Image (cartoon, rainbow, N blue to C red):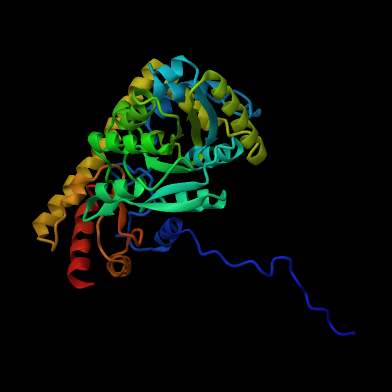
Length: 406
């Protein structure tokens, strides 16, 4: 008998290229050069270019000790964590005092955004289109597109700064069938944030057009060193204007809990009854996806936030991290200025947060990797947290060479 051809149910599957940012890290780890520099993945590094466990997190872990058990959390997560995280952003707000905030623990920022999208679908909000900034974090498009939303883009960046006019002009085309993903602070990848006056105009347009805001809040406290300052736009939309919104929190960056996947999704609603309804919907969405979230990171975060002396140390940790990144921006700018590198590099110090856009070409990015072992996104985004006193001069000289040569 002749052989029978083997047919797979997966024959029509198409290979998906590796995630661009994680592939940068893969190539970096495979490089044996002692001079290599990783400016790709967004994880904080100390002045020795090493991962940093925050002193406040160390204190929380000591307080938690090695006891305890490994039981499941509730579907909505650890209540102490949810309460403390909501209070962190909304302390003193009418929405908190009136119990108008629904919340659910999530798998860091990605999981929070995912639950936010699922909840909008299940609540029959009529929202079918998600606007994201162009450029933005690559997962915004992938995540909301996979949930079945139509994705549209808002022009965001031009000539080294926030393109406010184009952003608002495009925003005015949206309506009540639309939601917009807004970066609460430290825009990823550009590092360019609206001013408070620009935020007010953006909010006015969204209020007039009935557009629903989704705040991606991955860097609260990490950007300026102060949570309240970084949460200003959230408070203005939800407290000053009384708008409904989803606020998605991550404690990866501001507590260094990257691998613990600790986040929270919230909906600020009009009434306490609506909040209870949205709580139930979020629990149902959670049950359908991961059943219940991981416990350890939530226990650490709730201990940090809920213990006054540890919370005080965390406030100092935020200043430490944000100050070091700002110092690296200034150092890089001074190095490039000293080298007389062609072009205007003032945008490096005008931007804020972990990331910055250098504005170099993909060919120059490739040249940096091939010749100087410098790894970064091909969009020209760099993670300032990857720079330190020991490598910032090397990177500046490599960048100068790339600009002049490639």
